[in-house]
Amino acid sequence: QVQLVESGGGSVQAGGSLRLSCAANGDISNYHCMAWFRQAPGKEREGVAFIDRNRLTAYADSVKGRFTISKDNAKATLYLQMNSLKPEDSGIYYCAADLNRGLCVSPGTRRYSYWGQGTQVTVSS
Image: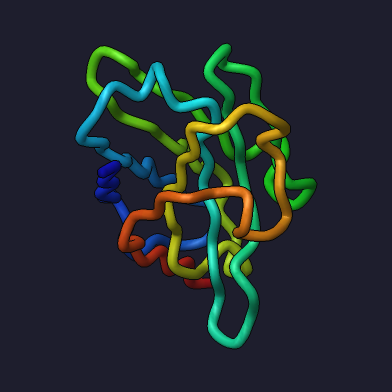
C-alpha cells in the first residue's frame, strides 16, 4: 500500500516562498505519475504540478514560472518549491501518486489512486 506524507506547509506573506515535501513509503521510481494538488475553501481540488517517471513536468497556468516540482528517488520524496506566493495560492496542498501509465496531467482527481493527508499553506497579503 502506497503511503504519502506531506510536510512543509505554513503561513507566509505574499511574495514569500515555501518548500513542500512528500515522503513515500516505497520506491517512487516505479510511480508513473506524481503530482501536487491544492484545495481552497469552497472550491474543488485542482492539479497544480505534475511529474512523470522520466521527470517530465507540467504546471497549471496559475503557477507557471513560480512553482517547481521535483523528486528525489533515492529519498523517496517529492518536492514543490513555491516562490512569489500570492494570497490565492492559499489552501490545503495534497501529494498524489499513481502507478499506471498514461498522461499525468489531470485537472481532476480521478487519475490518481494514492493521496497524502494534506498540508496547509496560508499566504497573507
